[in-house]
Amino acid sequence: MMAADGGSTVMIEKEFPKTEKRKTKYDVIIIGAGPAGYTAGIYCSRARYDTLILSGVLPGGQLVNTTEVENYPGFENGIMGPDLMITMRKQAERMGTTIIDDEVIDVDFRHKPFKILTASEEYECKAVIIATGASPRKLGIVGEQTFGGRGVSYCATCDGPFFRNQEIVVIGGGDSAIEEATFLTKFGSKVHIIHRKDTLRASKVMQERALSNPKIQMHWNSVVSDIQGDQKVQNVILSDIKSGQKTTLPAGALFVAIGHEPNTKIFVDRVELDEQGYIKLQDHTKTSITGVFAAGDVHDHRYRQAITAAGFGCMAAIDVDRYLTETKS
Ligand code: NDP
Image (cartoon, rainbow, N blue to C red; front, side):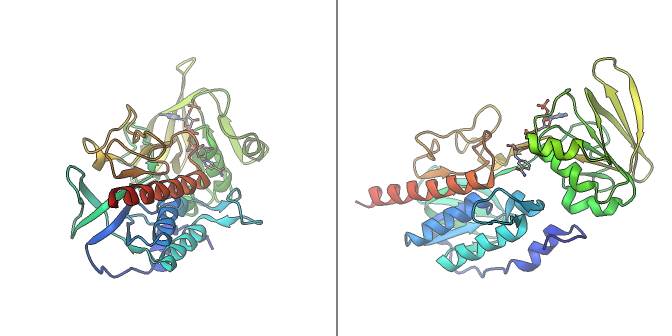
């Protein structure tokens, strides 16, 4: 199901039916549509709350950019990430959740009802669940932006097929980097993993798979210091962090897989965030604002799994139910 042509985002847009806007006042508004958001939608709607999910620009969250998910319980033979998200979305809709593919640009949590703003609409609700997830971290070097879409990518499943028979560079030492590198061996003539340490953070099973792959070459204690090319990426400059020695690696693509940052820009000064920008929680899923809850990668930088995000979505919905029941009486 995950397109061999890699166009996962495009595919999702086609498969997700747009839901008509019916009204602007809801009991619960869930911001974000990854495993946390959809699960919260399922639970809130099942508890008979009038529930809206504002899904943002990438319905399905990070899993729409994943290939096979082997560790989500209930799927004996694994399931493709986009399929899992489409199924969750349909389940939420079947329970009665309204889903609108619109991006939230601001929130007003100072008074009740809370106000949620998109470019085209102002919504009101009694309770909010923030489930906006996290986005790929940027490298922050010169050339990263210049060559964005011209060889620099953050999604192997989306862009890998563009680099058939070329040498490909992947940066990072976690599960994402190792998974992406392994996937990219389907297309590239060779895949170089650049890691700033001499050990990987990735799980043992994924390490073994990658390190035994003859198409993968490891470059330990190295960072990418420059990206060169004319119109597209042609060379990646590596610096050995111990010796400082620079090496030119001819490559057509550079995949950055160095972790994620929480999607909390619109919540700055609206709810309390920690020093890394993740939403701070107290008493399970409660944020610093009474009536506003959070679930998933937007607060959780420890587990960051689809299953834990879904679990947090369930918890937030149950907390919303308790809150709305208490405030009614
Ligand atoms: P991680 O935070 O686990 O790893 C990030 C990697 O990038 C680390 O090796 C880190 O190096 C490196 N890094 C960070 N910043 C920089 C930088 N500026 N320059 C160079 N390297 C840098 O992120 P992942 O996205 O890999 O994984 C996130 C979570 O998702 C994990 O819990 C992981 O297990 C999970 N996951 C699971 C998958 C699966 O089970 N199929 C697939 C993908 C992810 P250092 O080690 O030195 O800190």
